[in-house]
Image 1 (cartoon, rainbow, N blue to C red):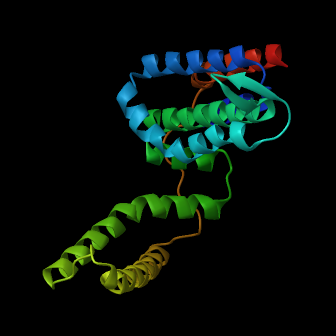
Image 2 (cartoon, one colour):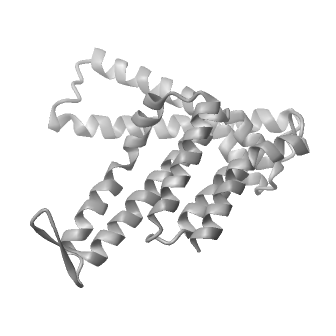
Length: 225
């Protein structure tokens, strides 16, 4: 987690005119993917979440002002091209760094990492319960949807959107009531407001190996600045 955050900060701090630096960042990420055996297809499918930012980056050269340059017969704003490039490359690298962290770290390990990094206890507790009960709430939503369909509800019709909205409200109330019951059960079992520490702390060798890519990214940033 520390390596991912530090790497993202290196990407953000790099001047947008240093095109070669972003290429080196991508090479570093590719090396991590090879060592971690992350399939490219897994990354590509999940990176589609960035599409709205890609569209924004493509619009900038056409709407920004200032001096223009001729690109394939089109007069594009020079400032817009750089701004679009800045959004596109930094956003893409940020998404890829996040996906790399998600592919190499289990959700439970993320929670333990947040706790070890002294993130506020309330934030750790909320994240833990969210991960624990996300599948439960999703299963409850599926059961409610099946029940509605069995009673003649067809979500494809616009005039039935009211039933869908009421179903979402019911799901919220059920989730809230479930949370109250879970909290009471935790208190009755000695809950003191903090998640118990689990696992074994990372050693110096683990820190050294994990921070190697970030250290190389910091070197690239130092040269770029």
